[in-house]
Length: 187
Image (tube, rainbow, N blue to C red; front, top):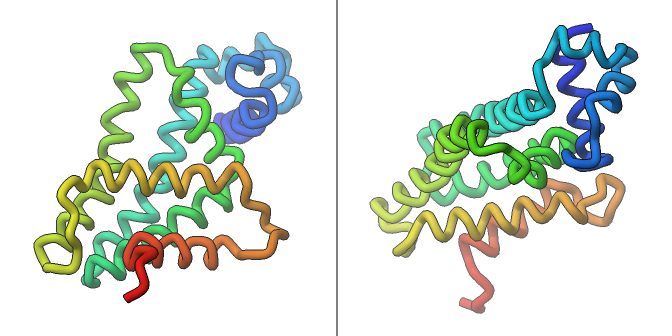
């Protein structure tokens, strides 16, 4: 039994029951451990939650950061980042659900540890918007607001998206990117 096995199981339990509805006994049962044995690997549910949030953001930062670091125009970076982000959420739905819906369950001390990682994630998006403004591609007076709005749209997709639905995650991402980059107005 590894710590990663425990975190994987905890993500699934938190997704199914919610952080507050899940117990350490539920997590122990999911990995076939006695509850007391689970405490040899982790100290608390809060520790598990913080580790899951960090794991999710590390994964997403790696994926979108790889795109943001390419020598591409900002509009193409944004399009590819939206694709990478939605694909990352969809491919890791248990972990993504914890990130998107359970972060509010962090206690103040853990929240303070989480915020810098969240801010780092958001700054990657803002930097690409800033690049687009500098290069004359975007008119974006408040990049932080645009990032929050974009994240709201992308994050909410996880609540209704189904892999066997009418659109692939890539097609959804492309439509969102077009909406952001081109708007609704007919040109």
